[in-house]
Amino acid sequence: MASHPPPAAGSGPALLDHNRLEALDAASGPERIRPLIRLFAESAEARWAELKRLGSAGDLDSVHAAAHDIAGSAGNFGAWKLEMAARQAMAACAERDRDAVRAGIEVLEPVLEQTLEEFRQRYGLKRD
Image 1 (tube, one colour):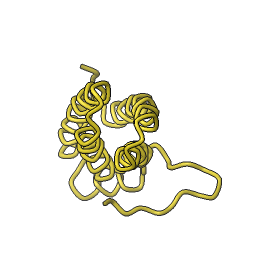
Image 2 (tube, helix red, strand yellow):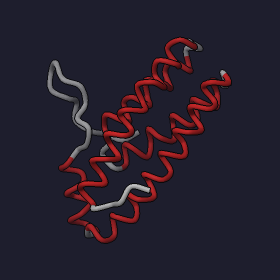
Image 3 (spheres, rainbow, N blue to C red):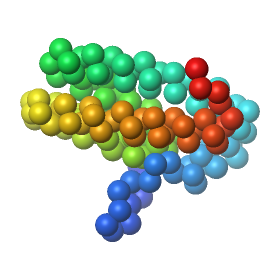
């Protein structure tokens, strides 16, 4: 699990941890990080589509696995809000709460879109 400081009292997680991204850029250079961010975006979109399909089918174990993949990848790149949203969906799956799973999946979509848009802007990526 990615470790990061807790958000300030009364606030949710930040969309992106810009300090982490700056550290990644400094360590490897944005030209080396850009393809990794592009791969993350493609993978997250594919996993999202799979998660949505699996959620409709009621396959909670597979939804949990897809949400786990999204959470792990998001945490690696400092996408805290996406990581936390995916972890909420995972928790709902573990509790076998189908209504909470559906709600968690609905929350993930806009967070994913916002996250990917911010990555696109930061790294000059084109939308496919």
